[in-house]
Length: 297
Image 1: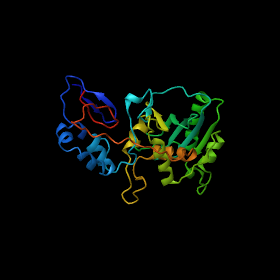
Image 2: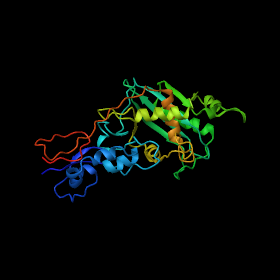
Image 3: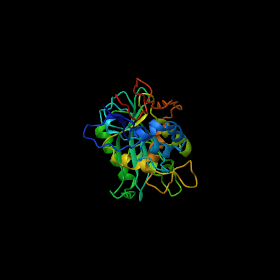
Image 4: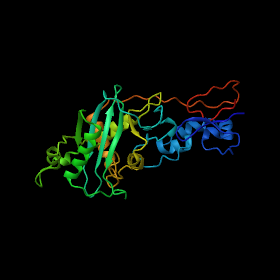
């Protein structure tokens, strides 16, 4: 007997022979599936996070998580399926490039370089996060220092390429004299003000995170992007403005990514998930269906 199961990233695998089986999803529980198959329908109607935990055993999803579609699945790093983290590769010269910045001094600044392919898939392929190493503590670098750091990188790695610059609208403020954006411009680094629509921006980011029927997303980052991978899945909803993100968190990379998504918006993607097939012990032939927790072959 072979037992197939779904792991936390919804990938079907065969358990090794020496595996000590403990049911982790409802589909793997023989007693429930054979005696009360309608229980699955009950679980499907639970709130999203509890449904993922109870139905699929996805305990990495927690109440209040802002980006519930986020997946870091190492098995998809190469083929880019069912993951938002991929193996680094050389960006083709023909892809459109963006440099996006969220400014910070006492708090970290975040600069991300994005490349967009012919299918409008976006890859965050380079980054500079102005963090001391202690979470949410900035480097206290001056605008001139940050601008020269960006210029040094682009002179070495992006020479001759056109890059669209988009930045936090706050850097264009002149209420205290010369703006941060003006300082950057004097150093040869040019930005346009980002669209700072928060709720629309978060929706755009979520649209890009959705997987299609082949497991492809529209937003990826490289596997060496440790701060994106660390902060994005940890962000929570605001307790009072429930549609927005809690701004007391380390949200600087998220803001930067939101600016990019608003600079390169996409249409809403319609994703039609396949409903799991209920196990019926009376059937003589079973076939693998997406979402089915296990089969006996």
